[in-house]
Image 1 (cartoon, rainbow, N blue to C red):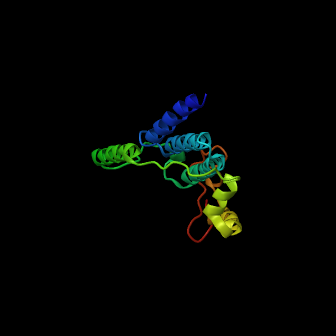
Image 2: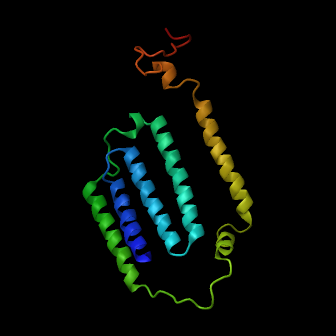
Image 3: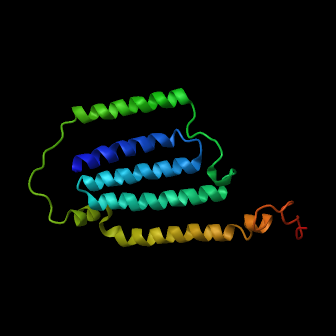
Length: 186
């Protein structure tokens, strides 16, 4: 079963990561990136790192949701669905990507991987958390909540009117009910 999990999640992570650059809309690219990160998090859990895999999954879900919301709210095209491209200089980026992949893949075979010395720690989750954060864990938790509150507040305070106020509930009001300089709209 573990081999099946690897051969499902590994290619899924690689294929969906590749599709980020093949889709021609930001919304679809965001979903493809989310699928790639979820599969990568699943691989981390499969490798025996449940804490790290869960953190990757939870972080990437929130990051991709925030990215999609901001993209839909602030991009010039509706919902990030208009055609676009995720890369420039197609031949150059393809050559750099393939060379980087070949170099990293070759590194797997030429690296002298260490063997475990001694026994595994009694609580690897605690040791990983302590190694990553040390005594700053409470600071990082408070900072995360503060940053989220700041993002939400900036969106709420940035505009007092939305698209439904301008164009009506069915988004078909023409002309839009926009304020005139120095006064109220028509």
